[in-house]
Image (tube, rainbow, N blue to C red):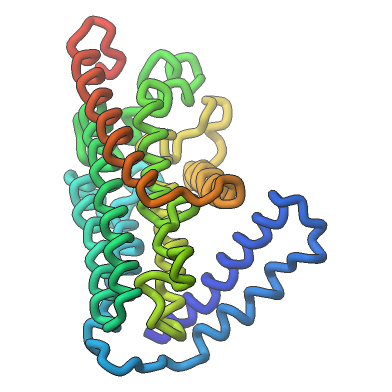
Length: 324
């Protein structure tokens, strides 16, 4: 527990500071009016050093289970992420299925946090967040199914190695054999659904404008409050590294002549670019209305993934199948 608190006290201020510095850079600040490193370091220290404020009427046991159930799946899912050939904490054959099972638990943490707070605002925020997460989990699940179809395996290492085959890879242009090109609509759907799944802007309707509260987190304080933000940034990295693994070739270099660079460096660079895109989108687009978010998930993303699922299935039965 002490190691977790120490790690949290280091990562959370740095993550918040990096996000603020990125926003300042995108917004063309000169750097003097927005000093994220100095402003956010006390913020993270404050969360760790201050105690919890106990609210009357809260369900005390479940109240502290909520933050734990929110951050645990984001960290536990890394056990199936491959960092190289046969380099994974758990290189299981059903890695993709295990990943989906682990990440589906997070929504329970949000519901428990809102309900156990004994606050109508927190409960309404939990309902909004859980409905949004479940809606976009469906689209992400269909994206996983499409990748499973073209790969023929649930093993995460096999998914990466399958992207090292094809016309592009045989000519030294590895990036043309990655899944992002033939599955571009699925890649876009997965990434945007990841934005909504992690409650990042412009999908951060958990913080209702009309309520001026932080949704299901309103009754939390100290490190319990900070744990929710730590889970948000952990989910950002998880969504990014999964997108890299499933669509961008994982540890594979984009060109054959760059194979001398270790694979974990390529994996880190690709993941870093996708994480930076999270912050870029946050600083660029305004927040959507809740009905627009739900319409995007149910009326656009799910039909697109279903149609592309059928298209890829039919494509694989033709002589033009590129995944043989």
